[in-house]
Length: 340
Image 1 (cartoon, helix red, strand yellow):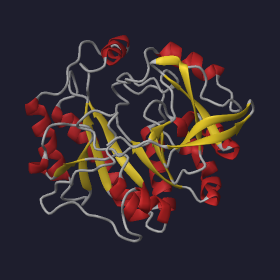
Image 2 (tube, one colour; image 1 turned 30 degrees about the horizontal axis):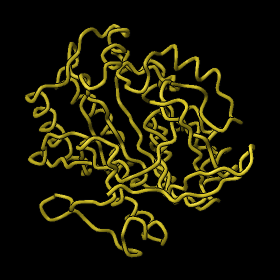
Image 3 (cartoon, helix red, strand yellow; image 1 turned 135 degrees about the vertical axis):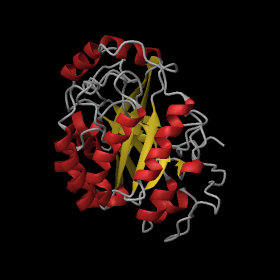
C-alpha cells in the first residue's frame, strides 16, 4: 500500500496554492540540512510551508505544508549548527530525532569538509544529553574497504568511536559502501584520489559484522544494518528502519496523532518479534529500495547542494556543483537553492 499525504491549500507569497501535508518529514537523505540549512529550515517552519523540486523533473515542483507534521527525522554529519534552533522546534510541539553519522575517515581524506572527529563526538554527547540516547542514533556509514582500509582497520575505527559514544547512544546503524549502484559515487571516489573501489565482499562483510558483535559486548547497543539485503542476524545485527515507527512509538507515545498514523495505541510500542524479524509494515516507503525498512516520509532535500565533499557521496554529481548551489542559497527562499 502506498501512503498518500493529505492534500491541502497553502497560502504562499504567490497566493493560495495546492499542496501536501505529510505527517513525517525526512530532512534529509539528499543533503545535510542541520549542517548547512538550519536557518532556512526554521524559517520555513515559521512560514508553514516550503517548496520542493523533483530531481528527475525540474519542472515538477511541490508545495509541502507543515500543518500536519508530527515528526521530523534529521540526517546529518554535523548537527551542531542547528542546535541553536532546537528550542524553537520544542516550542512548536514537533517531535524530532537525529540519525548522526560519525565516521573516522580523517586520515584517508574521504570526508574533507566535516568537522574534526573530536568536535563531532562532543556534538553527539551534547545532543544525547539534551534529547536522550534514543533520539540520537549513531551511524557508521558507509563502511569502505580497500587499500589501507582493511576490515581490521575499519573495526579499530568503529571501536575508537564506540568507546567514546556508547554511553550516549542506544543504537549503531551500519551500511556498506554501495559503489556499483551509483555511478557518481565511483566518479567522486576517483576524483578524490581513491582510485577504483568495489563494495566489500562477503568475507569482509562477515569479518566486520563478527568484529562489531564482539565490540558490542562492552557497549550493549542495538546494532542494525541500513538498506542491506545480507542477513547478519547471526551476528546480532538486525535490518534497520531509519525512518522508524518503532522508535517513534517508544519516544513519542504522548502524541496521539502520530500514534494513530503509525497504528499504535497511545503509550504502546510494538517490539520486534521473538525471532528478531519485524512483521510486514503497511507504512513501508515503496519509493525506497526493497531492502530499506523505512516507513513513508516526505524528503525535503535537494541533490547537489551539500558541501561536505564526502568522496563516497551519492547525492552530489560533483563537488563544484554542490558548492555553487550552496553559495547561491538564501535562507528566505521557499526551497533549498538550485541544486539539480
